[in-house]
Every structure is written in C-alpha cells, then in structure tokens.
Length: 250
Figure 1 (tube, rainbow, N blue to C red):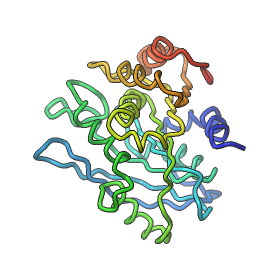
Figure 2 (figure 1 turned 45 degrees about the vertical axis):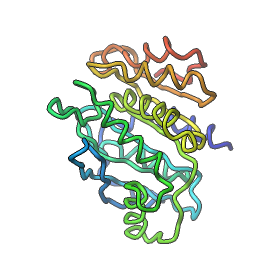
Figure 3 (figure 1 turned 135 degrees about the horizontal axis):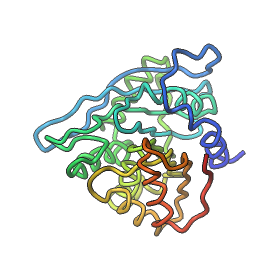
Figure 4 (figure 1 turned 90 degrees about the vertical axis):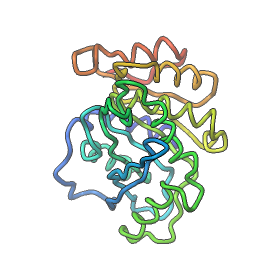
C-alpha cells in the first residue's frame, strides 16, 4: 500500500480522535518521547515549546508526520491520532504552540499578524537536515529518550493540521515552497482536519493559492458546518481556492 493511500485511510478513520486526549493505549506499538523545541518568536525572543515524538516499532519509519493542533488545544489533544500514525509506521512530531497571543502574534491562531512566527515554524522543517537546527536537536533528544539513538529522521514528510492548525499548516507548507524548495520537494501530502480560518489575515488563502500551483496532494476531511468549525470556514476556503478532488466529508 502506498504512503498516500495509508495516510488517506488513517485520515478518514481517525480524524474524530483529535477532539480529546487519550488516557493510554495498551495495544500501542509506538514509543513516545516528550521534549521541547525552540522556535523564534521575534528577532529578540525565542519560545521553548513542549513537543511529543512518537516512534513506530519499525526501524525505518515510512515518513515524518508534522501534526499541528488547533485553537485552545495542545499536543495532548492529538495523542490518539498521533498514535494511529505511529502504529502505521510513521514517525510523528507534535508541538504545542500558543493558541492566540495578540501581544506578540506568536500563535497558531492568527489574531493580528502571525506570519513572521509561522515563517519560523516552517523553518523547523526547512532546516531539519542541519544537525544543529531546532528540529534536529529536538529529534536527537527524543531519539535518545526513546532508545532510538542512531536512527535517522526521515527525509520525506507529511504536514497535517486540525482546526486552526489547518489554517496554519496551509501557510507553512507554502512557505516551504517559496523559501526552502529542497525541503518542499520532500513534502508528500498536506492534510487538513476540519480546517478553520483564523479570525484575521488570509493565511489559508495565501497558502492554498501557492500550493494549488503544485502537484502536492491536499486532502481534507470536514464536519458539517457548525459553530465549532466556524460554519466550515476552512473547507469553504479550500473548495474555493483549490480545484482538486475532495477526499471526504463526515
């Protein structure tokens, strides 16, 4: 089964799991390591954010999945879905980002202009092959904690985001296209999990407009319009900006 088909199946079968964290998974075949990742907030400040890594049982993961939570959530809310990816053989990286910080705009949800911060989040992946980079250092620490020292981080990857995280990762993926084309070439899929537009800015529209010029697959799954997904605002934006087959609607 192809990488894309495996991820599509996981997307359809497990998106509902992002709503609440799990207490545990006795049948899990993955190993979790909790560490931190440094992300520049501005030219003069850097955030140290909690980050969970999920290592599959296989010695060679199929790819890296960058999984981003949405507004008022954390990486704990993504554990059930992250575990599904890891059970299927993927290495998963799940950071916690501030939800909404109007004072400095360093947040997953855009309440002012968070593009500079999202550019710095994109740099995590764009510079991942540099041994001293923030993502590489976080991975090295996590691999040591998980007993996987010497296991290389996969070169290919998937970017996935839930709710406001879908708005953010659309922008992040396109930023990789414009700024780190070598890294973008290794992006195999963008997954949007019930995406929701931020209250300000045009991050998702900007990101999707750029991605639409490429052959990078963009898959989404959405709930019917209701209050929590802002009446399916992200899905509406996706269908407006990208003329592609729509994977599924729950």
